[in-house]
Image (cartoon, rainbow, N blue to C red; front, side):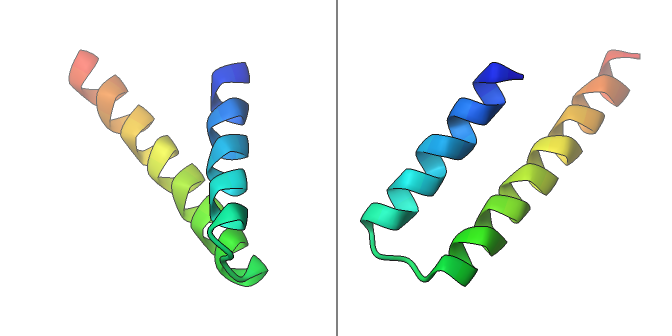
Length: 48
């Protein structure tokens, strides 16, 4: 869980440094979280 928070923090900082609009930053972080959950579920389904 700490690793996930670190990834989101680095991603957020990178977008800020690039000068991304805050709305896009929130949208892309939400998309990152959704993709991480989908990847986790897919990996768990393959492991069965």
